[in-house]
Image 1: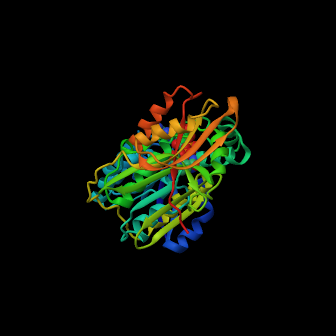
Image 2 (image 1 turned 60 degrees about the vertical axis):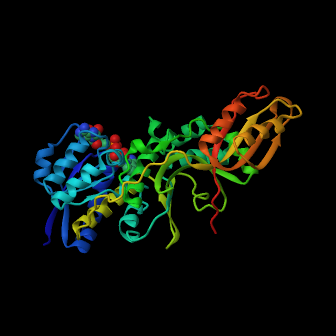
Length: 407
Ligand SMILES: NC(=O)c1ccc[n+]([C@@H]2O[C@H](COP(=O)([O-])OP(=O)(O)OC[C@H]3O[C@@H](n4cnc5c(N)ncnc54)[C@H](OP(=O)(O)O)[C@@H]3O)[C@@H](O)[C@H]2O)c1
């Protein structure tokens, strides 16, 4: 009979419940791999369990309760007591990661968090282990399945944002309160964690500039399709001028981009480094059983030999004005000279145009263009000037375009 490996489970909701069930199914397999018999020795919810007792009777704590407090307090106390911790809590790590990793190192405990980013996609392991020796230039990700599902539906069926959100909620891809998903905050937390690992520098959620998808309209997607572009909510962390820029925003991608074909509730992350060119990993982004599988993978890793998240060595400056190409959608009066005036204003700020489409007549006249990469501050200055032109029938709409093509 193998020795027992005792697991304290904090949270028994979507992920915690699925984890308990998966562990029951897979206990023999885990015992075979690790030589230890995993067993849940305590469960904490709002209505049952006592944290101190659970901690006392556990070798490892699984934190799948979410939120900042008391999750932070429990994880810290577990690590300081020398227990390994597995968590799926991106909000906690993106705000308090350094404090928690420090506590883990001080006691030689493991803090594992594969399920916090990318659902089942094993991107944390790849960054911490497989690519630990690589000099990474850029990490680009679709790290929120809810928004990717909504954008896929808007593009495919011409649904409005509200209709696509309702469909996501009906199918269980969006929470009753989807705010953190659709406003980009969830993806921003995940990008902060990925950036911290990939660039070996502290990154706090507050340093991630983010925008959501609530303002997007399906006609932007229709027009952009004519220009060969598809819309995604993209997270980017990249070295710029010796610093690091971490952002989340909607962006158009050309068809050749490795993330362009990622559809529905899937997640994907592309890592670029001179030595490896580019690696893209993709898979289901969330869901109880899927996330539980990532949690179990971490539990098994913790049962075998130790792995640590080392302290950061770099102090990279966070860059917030970067170059982007832009899609620009203008509802204009149908009269001569409009295109020339827009071009003149753009020219004043140094914005040059890559392609232009003129659509519709009269009340439906529209000018849609893609501008070459330009510092965002300059582009937005031009946008403000265009908004003030007398022939504009509505505020111009702008969305970034990612121009990189991959073969
Ligand atoms: N759902 C997903 O697909 C997914 C994917 C990746 C990561 N995650 C992360 O996994 C974590 C859990 O998500 P979930 O969807 O499983 O949440 P959930 O269904 O709302 O479950 C949360 C569980 O934690 C318990 N809990 C919450 N606050 C507590 C407190 N203060 N004291 C004691 N127990 C408390 C709840 O207790 P009661 O049962 O008494 O309410 C419930 O059992 C979150 O960090 C989330 O971001 C989830």
